[in-house]
Image (cartoon, rainbow, N blue to C red):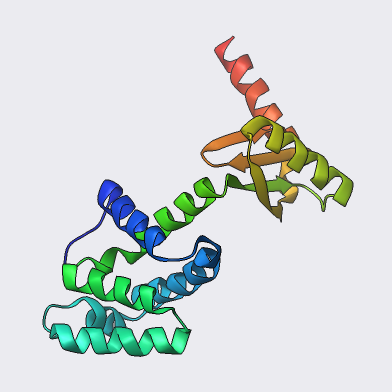
Amino acid sequence: MRKVRGTKAKKYAKQFLSLVNLDQVPEIAVKLEKIVFLMQKEKQFRNMLTSPSFKDEERIGIINSLCEKLGFPEEVKKFLSFLSMEGVLIGLGEIVRYINALYLEAKKKVKGVVTSAVELPDSVKQKIVDSLKAITGRDVELQYEIDPSLIGGLRVKVGSTMYDMSIKGQLGLLRDKLIKG
């Protein structure tokens, strides 16, 4: 059982994307995330899928059964079996993160989170989407959250970039300027 990080996880994610129809990726990724969640929550389940104390045939049988129940295409079944044989199925969570990122990149999309003090009207949401599309050059999928502690304004996170236009954020900047003098 080997950890999968960074470039290795990205390599496996690229392999996955070469196997399946790109339009199927979001649905399959959600189901893969369910497997990851179960592996994190249930030690016995994780051990059945990843422990070398189980024979390859036993693990593959479990994977095949799981894939049938989740309605995975044959390519996904083969991919998960391959990860098991390689001893890297424990890193499925990291691989799925790269699958999602590479999918968004291939579709020229970006995901973001908009946090506001109150529910935003649809017209404002559309202006945010249009502005972010102009900034990023990509289609934008946004998730909206409410945080009354922001007092007013918005905080937008797209990828690793944060745009903080909240009153709370602006007050924090002002405080920092005053402290520095």
